[in-house]
Length: 496
Image 1 (tube, rainbow, N blue to C red):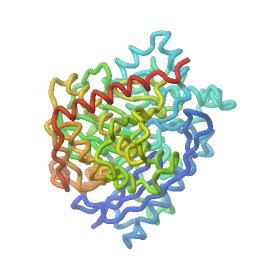
Image 2: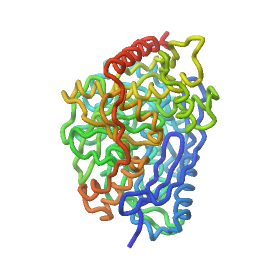
Image 3: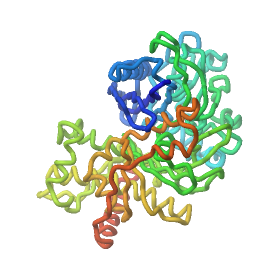
Image 4: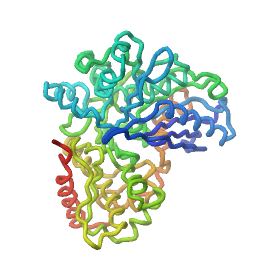
């Protein structure tokens, strides 16, 4: 009997492979960072070949680390950075250009053009998304307009589009499959939420040929098998979900009203909404999962910069040598002393949706130290999360009693305490920090009977610590009001 599920967790800054046992715990984990490219201000690119090579290397290394082989793996689950856009040649399998990353803002002007012709209300109603460079649709159109002969080749059926899950499955199956799951499809700005299919009107409006699009499949199902030579023997691919939907699943949020926040490169709050498409003026509506052909939905608030702000402290300012040092630096001062960091490096996401906002540090005095800036950076993650939860409360008429959290940054105890203080509710930290990978494993495991059903999965979900709020309500609200002032000063900075 197979001992493990192999989760491939392809993220924005690194690729990871994790083996999960039947208790839902990680038996081995391997990760590799890969190159980030910023060719122009506001542009972000990846080399799709780097993505594939790093992910395959992690898969091989994690099997070796666990002294396991392909026969020990019941299935593979895939989770991925969403919206990042890859276009490749169907025959050769080679990308036609670098992948355009979800953070990239190069299509801001195109979004304005589409808004001017009245497309935004249609996009909002049909896809649950806002008209923003964040999503895949305008990225595809940019590639077709700017890569030589791409449009003609796409219209002739020679090119394939995919988010990163599609790209990995294409490579894992030796080019046999061109698929995506419904959670990833719902992030393209081209997927009709209610009908569960590619929207022909939006494809036409964005001038994206239907022939480029992958088949949409369930999030948990036997999708195909890997090429034998990649991992020694064929392994079933049984689960696929975008990273944030995978984390929602990994947190055991299967019912309407349950919510989680994942702290990664960005910060993402999802609240399960059940079988009905929820409505919101400022948040996104997205597919939570598709199981047995049935769609479930979620409200989502996407914060563009979270862990990336800590990377900026390390790589941009040189205040720390490694990301884990930020906790000690931030604890070197008892408070941020009125300093606010607004990490709007690529604009602001939910609920502000200001593509022209830019980063700012406010409240500096002669007494400000690196510790104050570090602490204010951590606080910015907590404030942005509260911004999203305040909007969810407006949309649902219900405030959360607790927030479930996961992601690498949740290992930072100070950040988690700040989050509880800013929200005024308990914060429950997942025992398995990489819940994104765990969710992909759960989906794959259900497809092959490794776990029987949702109840079986729920029993495998565990938390290792609860952070209780300690801050007074007056202090909390004073700090939050200061955050609002800082955000207003950062908005619209890059607009003409």
